[in-house]
Image 1: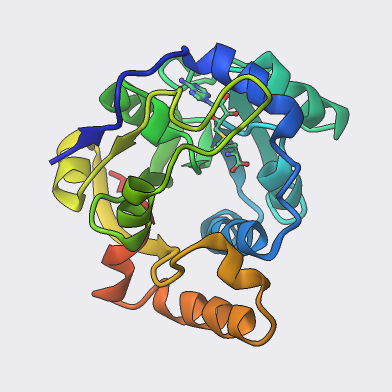
Image 2: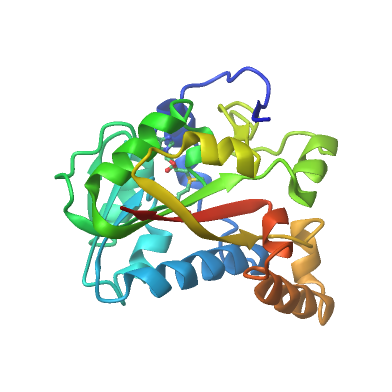
Amino acid sequence: MSRAVAEPRLDNRTYYDDFAGWYERDRHLPYHRMLDDLEVDLVARYGTNKDVLEVGCGTGLILDRVTQFAGRATGVDLSGGMLAPAAARGLAVAQASATELPIKTASVDVAYSFKVLAHVPDIRGALAEMSRVVRPGGWVLAEFYNTRSLRRLVKWAKPPSAISAQTDDEAVYTRYDSAEDIRGYLPPDLRWVTSRGIRIVTPVAQVHRVPVLGALVRKAETVLADLPGARDLGGFLVVCARKT
Ligand SMILES: C[S@@+](CC[C@H](N)C(=O)[O-])C[C@H]1O[C@@H](n2cnc3c(N)ncnc32)[C@H](O)[C@@H]1O
């Protein structure tokens, strides 16, 4: 069953505009590098030399790497504050909601979204939009926060973390979903083909900073990410769905 965490105190645009200045602060750390690497690697499988769209591209950290191998890469995000660094990187980005993409129907091969859809209340609307813009035979790579994960357990036990001088990570709408929930959100023209589980065994991010242990955990995460059974327990569950 899907679960939203508490009542959101801020709407998404206000929250991310406020977060923008802090967003890249920790991204060079090994834990965040691992998440980004596993996500970019997945996009490379489906999007090399293809037209791709990132939904919720934020400051463009992922999109910047995807432009190196995609045929054409564009991004959309709700927050002007998050988009400013993406535009400064020279990326092709536009300000819009995931539920109303300013993109032509059937115009890209892959639409992907990481760490975004769990914050979108109208998840069916967002997935229908991602499907609309993908060409028949193309792919939607959609990442969810997984109810059945160690990450979910740890988040439960932990106090909120600051995301800026003003607010914390529990101020925004956040939903955790099971695989069954996600299947129920997919529009009829999207078929779940496979998935990747990201952050399966990492108890806390700091583990990745411990010499030797950090490297071992990263290795384990890389091996488990595509392993049937194990991948279902990823804190971040990326569904790879094909447009019919
Ligand atoms: C945690 S950040 C992830 C950014 C990027 N995908 C990454 O992995 O670095 C979440 C992003 O989702 C964007 N976002 C939240 N709700 C959105 C919506 N309804 N439509 C488009 N973008 C949204 C936020 O503005 C923010 O930039």
